[in-house]
Amino acid sequence: MNSTKATGASLTGFGAHDHTRCRAASLAAAEALCAARKLQLTPVRKRVLEILLEAHEALGAYDVLARLAEEGLGSKPPVAYRALGFWVAQGLVHRIEKLNAYVACAHPGRAHDAAFMICRDCGRVAETESHGPFGQSAGEAGFQIETMVIEAEGLCPKCIPGAGL
Amino acid sequence: MNSTKATGASLTGFGAHDHTRCRAASLAAAEALCAARKLQLTPVRKRVLEILLEAHEALGAYDVLARLAEEGLGSKPPVAYRALGFWVAQGLVHRIEKLNAYVACAHPGRAHDAAFMICRDCGRVAETESHGPFGQSAGEAGFQIETMVIEAEGLCPKCIPGAGL
DNA sequence: ACTCATGCTGTTATGTTATAACATATCGCC
DNA sequence: GGCGATATGTTATAACATAACAGCATGAGT
Ligand SMILES: [Zn+2]
Ligand SMILES: [Zn+2]
Ligand SMILES: [Zn+2]
Ligand SMILES: [Zn+2]
Image (cartoon, rainbow over all chains, first blue to last red):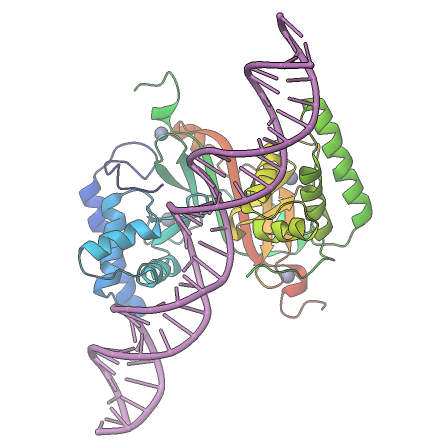
């Protein structure tokens, strides 16, 4: 179901923007982060992040793995899952639960809870910041939130019938 | 990973409550809803809803299937997935993306976007109402929301270290 | 009564996503 | 050179999900 298609899709909101610049920025953020936390920016890890940045859309673990394999960097699932897990733990990659897919963070550097808008038609994913969806209810219930999943599915501006196609 | 354990867990918030009554209420809501929409409340469908209500926690599709199989109501994955899909479509069961699991709705009858708090320690799941996590950002982006996934993972009151165990 | 459409269930087979467990490699350090 | 720590390579399997088709019941129309 997941295959290699769109590459020109935008992430931050659904508007167009400068891929090259945002890829470079993310990679720089990754290097800074690894240096600061004394983590190893290994070839596999670096390449996995690049793959997500190049794709600029959500990719399944096996999609990422296929690209690694093409380049001789690993061909077995754990290789991809480990690298993805590493970046998710560092906050530079987010997992989209609804798609079982992974996407490079659109706001690297800043700490944040991410929220996503997923177009069910074209599959593009936009990351925004969350607005604390639980209000007081979590506090009232005595629940201590650690991580959040916030995903909206619907139609992006380009895919709304009658929109400027 | 999903197995047959806790049965006494609460759903609406993390406090205790009357199972028997809430099960009966849900089942009644299901009957009313099927009648109103002219849908068939078949044995498999009814039993699947009952299984979720009895468990009173999130169950994986294969957990549900196992219970159906014990009772001779179907032993192949599609049987469970179809019935679960039916209830999800009707809004009486919610899918928890983070757990790949299904849970009976805690507020049957009312139309709502559900939000969940998932305890990473004991696995209990509490359903609350959402507080519109996207604020204006979706509108600003021109995104038309159809469905939402809102899930918080963390520690429930009973599992917070130093809580009244 | 017959036939047809519809909707649900049964079943086979397969596809997709994810992890456990263990082996090997690498590097800094003592 | 031995050792712990970290990362990768590999095997095998677990866990989750659906496509596709066959069969059966029900109910409407004729
Ligand atoms: Zn982000
Ligand atoms: Zn779209
Ligand atoms: Zn609900
Ligand atoms: Zn708990």
